[in-house]
Length: 233
Ligand code: APR
Image 1 (cartoon, protein in one colour):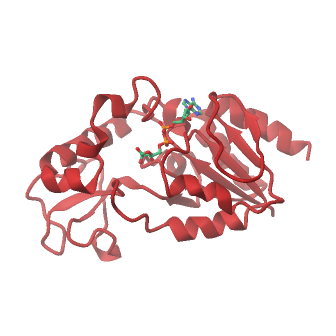
Image 2: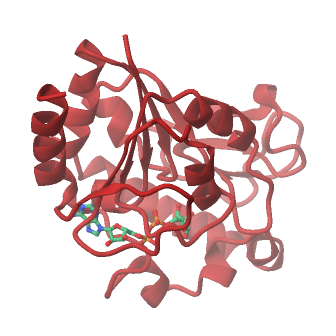
């Protein structure tokens, strides 16, 4: 089976009702990213950050995968699919995608403040245990924190993701402004002979060598068009 690799961003979940970061009205217009999504912000005011993610996590219970997530998952019938996502929601998994690499962490997981990437410290939150409380401890005794990769922290899955992109037969980018590195740098790892599709209603500053096919639509309509295009190949 051909290897189909997706790189998705906040636009993938926009049609599920989750706001993006940099569109008008986006999350970073409402909150100072430095205060709520950086390691410095967490160290300065852990309670503000923990509550910011508690709020985003609660929102997750009210949304569901959009048609775009479902179509990405359905591609596994005909391709060996890997989804590399910058999103921290679990909508790809809930739509049925089985191979998802989260570059920026996962909203439904929590971990140790002292050793956030130690596998034994990572726990899955549930609807019954959704909020992280100040004073709640990880098993190593440090404050339990969101399992999110904040600005200023390393991206542990980057190398794995780059290796996956470098072996792609087809590379599809959906709903990311390609503003944030190192995630945005993954586009440079696509093999020269792999066709690249960009699904986004807006133009995106392209940052990699060889060209791409821009499907200038939202995630769901864009995936419908992509499936048509690939079926004629
Ligand atoms: N369908 C597809 N794409 C869409 C849709 C839609 N319905 N609506 C908006 N978009 C596109 C926008 O045009 C934009 O290019 O989604 C992209 C959203 O860009 P950002 O808001 O910058 O989100 P993203 O690229 O995922 O941000 C990357 O920044 O703050 C950090 O960690 C955070 O993972 C995030 C990273």
